[in-house]
Amino acid sequence: RRLRELAAETPDRSALAGRWSRSRWPGRFDAFRAARPDADDHDHAALLEAVARAMRGGLSLRSALGEAAAGEADRSPGRALVRLAPALEAGLGLTEVIDRWMADDAGDGRQLAGLALSLGAQLGGASARSLDAAAASLRDRAQLGREVRALGAQARASAWGMVLAPVAFAR
Image 1 (cartoon, helix red, strand yellow):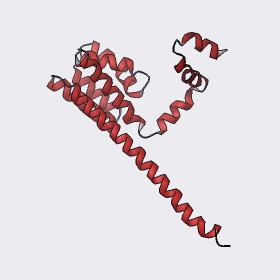
Image 2 (image 1 turned 180 degrees about the vertical axis):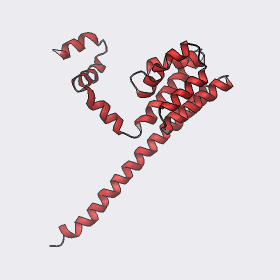
Image 3 (image 1 turned 60 degrees about the vertical axis):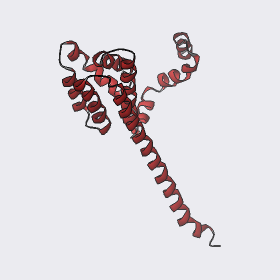
Image 4 (image 1 turned 30 degrees about the vertical axis):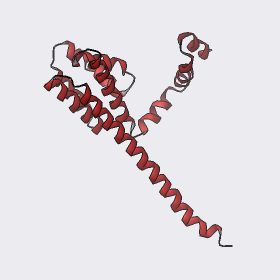
């Protein structure tokens, strides 16, 4: 019955399976995503790309940040920025809001994203290119982390093979 309700709510049939599985097991996907060390970098890169895309569309950094935060509200960096939106609306400076956002999480991804946003806010001009470069850096770092974990797993499997091979072929 829940699947039928989701089918009625979801016009895009390709997204139906993902919505159904997330509604059926809500906490599992979040816990799995949080366990991945590169999820933080990936989420911050997506936020920076969304801000840069909105800026290339003609929005100011302040407006682009609000739009990107609303669009990325299902991810941790977007949720944190949405919580700070009232401070922006109350007239607090953009750099102060970005500093508060950076203070919420001491992770390297948030710090790099915050520094890129803060630099764009202080210097002005067309900062979409620098935001894209920071996002690419975060994605490269996440990819490198995945590769290191894969190589470590391969080395552990090889070590087990070397340890167990003499026992298996001793006969």
